Image (tube, rainbow, N blue to C red):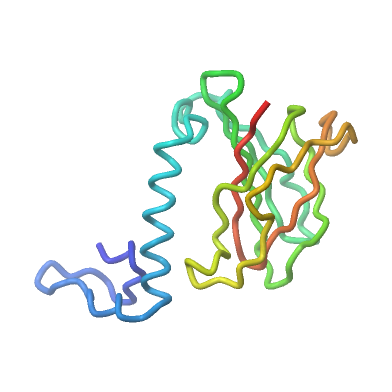
Length: 160
């Protein structure tokens, strides 16, 4: 209740939500991000089909405490349904960040929480495909090199 546009105060059933906050660009940005996250969740089967199955999730990089990053993959029922999410928990951009990926093919950025639409700096990977290279990384036979924006999460959709 109000979280979908970053209301600061706790919800109270006796009061209206602070809709006036939507007059501010950053609150509108949070509202747009929630809208886009919901649309992406609905569009990409990898994000919802196997929520309750072990095979629907895999850590790709969970040991990079020095850079404060996490990377994981989500899988749908179809072998080609996969999404990779990379998170950077620092205010420093991570340029040239290599991620080991489970499959050859291409990866396209489909959500970037640092987008200017959401009030961010718009640092990212563009809309073109990032082709996996046959360079082993993190226990995987292929890898991609991406930019991780500061204090942001980026979702990549897989295409064989």
